[in-house]
Image 1: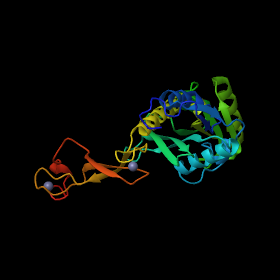
Image 2: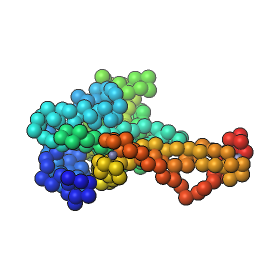
Image 3: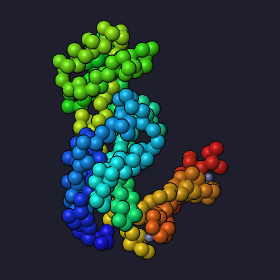
Image 4: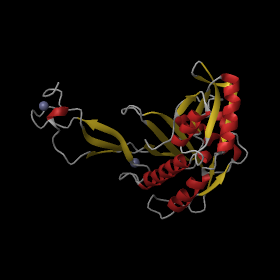
Length: 289
Ligand SMILES: [Zn+2]
Ligand SMILES: [Zn+2]
């Protein structure tokens, strides 16, 4: 098997650990790109790995969470050679104020080859967000911004402007009548309600598309092979700053090159990150301190 095979995993079964219908987008991409036949680990409660709606806290990194899901999938399907899981994380954009950023990982582990590959996709195109509301009108306004009802909402109790899922936690709010009813219940109990976008994949079509893109990125990485040993997943692992200033020639913080490394044999290759040979003096620590 080499990464250049049209379908390197033809007829290999991969166990996917999900409760949230991610097979709908991951399955076709991995089947078409790698030949994998994605089967579900049915009956697993992936919520025990942590949920977005805070009833179970998630611990560890996004990659750790995906690995834990795959390990559970292998317990469920001990003869499966390949395990797949996806994991999302959402939060404020690291550089742009008032913008949210969604990050999706799709991880593949091939136990026979000792191979672990990760597909990535990060985008500010996410409906991640929340609102604290004290009347139905505000809840409806937030719902419209969250692309409800195509996208789901989660309604929680609220104490001191903080979510109080212990007092009330209603998932699967998927139509305006239900929204009105549960907002009424929570307002009567708490005086305010904490409403947030449901980030579970099956209730979030925007997220489903992002997971699909991350799965395509996984296929792309698989097909990028090490020039020395042909191991799949030869990809950028480092971005190296130091593009020289146009004016004084000193190295700047602008990215000069990218390094690609092989997981298997540590072969390393550098390539220019940009067609520019010099950086704008505005980005130079000497010319523009
Ligand atoms: Zn290699
Ligand atoms: Zn300079």
